[in-house]
Amino acid sequence: MAQNDHRVILRPLTAGDEHEFLALVAASTDLHRPWMSLPAAPPAFHAYVTRYEGPDEESLLVCRRDTGAIAGLININSIIRGRFQSASLGYAAFAPSTGRGYMSEGLDLVMRHAFERLRLHRLEAQIQPENHASIRLVRRAGFRNEGYSPELLFIDGAWRDHERWAITNAMAGMVPAEPHPTRPER
Ligand SMILES: CC(C)(COP(=O)(O)OP(=O)(O)OC[C@H]1O[C@@H](n2cnc3c(N)ncnc32)[C@H](O)[C@@H]1OP(=O)(O)O)[C@@H](O)C(=O)NCCC(=O)NCCS
Image 1 (cartoon, rainbow, N blue to C red):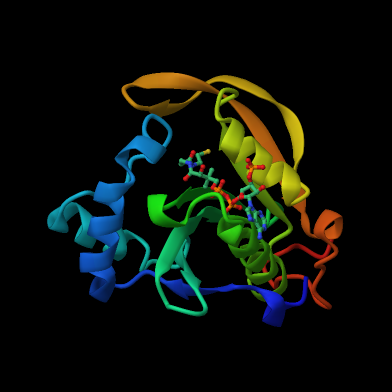
Image 2 (cartoon, helix red, strand yellow):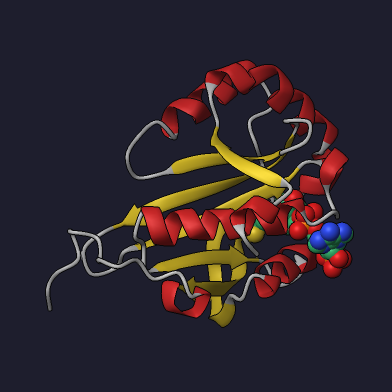
């Protein structure tokens, strides 16, 4: 899909998004539980924004092009350079906008950004086997299931087993002309 055909755009999460973001989180409790926990009050929200101001992580809002409304959030976490050139994705739709393909389009834009601009080689998503909507999202985007890790992440009060889904820039057909300068020559 060409970038101009997308109904959504990406923009970084900022402190100015507090009001809309917290209202959407409050409206999305049933959708997010037990998979995702997002900041629900101003202090946690501001700590979250500050966390993503660093160089190793990005928090990107998926916004509707027509209204500007925030439809979802996709975080590029744990960027590792050197021989990895990889990152781990975290994401959530917000209840008013779910089930309309906005997150699929947002994920496509995040893949372009991560592979072509950040020049990462690999994106991973760790997903609990029962989280069918999340598995459908990454499967649609071309990720492959690479395996299963027992007790991988501490979610909703316990260490949870996760499937490990991943896609490389070559699988996505989004390989930059030059690799990132931190990748060794050989
Ligand atoms: C996982 C999650 C982000 C997926 O969000 P989503 O709204 O289903 O994703 P999309 O916006 O891409 O919508 C896709 C759905 O809309 C439907 N759809 C409707 N119109 C569409 C269109 N024009 N284009 C594409 N899909 C469309 C698709 O058929 C699809 O439905 P399906 O999954 O039943 O097949 C969401 O369920 C969520 O926030 N879950 C809780 C948090 C979470 O689990 N995070 C991930 C932890 S690993």
